[in-house]
Length: 386
Image (cartoon, rainbow, N blue to C red; front, side, top):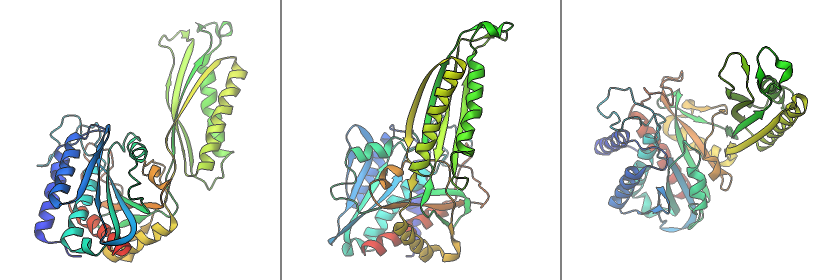
């Protein structure tokens, strides 16, 4: 599918407008209004959602058939942009540093292309457009699922794409099976008995107990999990006391657990709980542990991955479609793929060496990325519903 000069100009302008007006999780009010306005202008049925931002649109099929959903995340990050470009963020302390402006523009562009090419009149099934808020905080997909976005009509297959700086522009990445890790956050408060730093035997040191726990947790990775399975337990915060000659009464630490499968996720969580009980008994301290499951593992369906590989190869060539390893970052697209067969693919936007880096104040991409994304999604719609 060849894109016209007018279409490209419109698409670039759309992305630049989104980039100039970033909004963080669940505050994407202007973004939501803009999406609704564009869809209305195209004549697409669309609506917002109760008690949250985000949009769901529907292009009904000319004939009966399955429903394909395409998801784009729409939220920005609380980062001050440092790029000096004409479309630089106009909102202090906020920017699109993860490419969600690209994702949103690509999905709107796909919708317009489906209509203008005449493909909409040939669809054997429905195309659902899901513009999801709050991906960065891990709550948006779950909230949309709870509000029934995968129903009426029921979604049979769901796809998405995310920009990737480690892939050159014009290249695509495909993850077979494991795509993104789970993310469980834990917080631990250790209560001991404070005392003078010169007389540790008169107290009950929560700092030593916490330090022991940090070492013990790594046993869960090295000895409780298959070495071929990606697994991470990272303690990222440790706070205790302020005086340099006083052993404090309490210590607080926290971190993240990452796993690629529910089984490993469960094992690491159990190891955390066992280790906490162990230091409580060994050091005679009281422990209060909180664990929050933010993301489940994101697993790509094999059939959908193969389908997306074919679509990407048709657009960029098979030699530019790469089998990517799973990443230990998380993605709340997992809440959709827990319920519906789906896959998220990687859209090359960089130099092949990780630049531009996601979540950097200097993150930006070439507008050429938009055209690749639209063509791949259009190919998917045509192939699955055409």
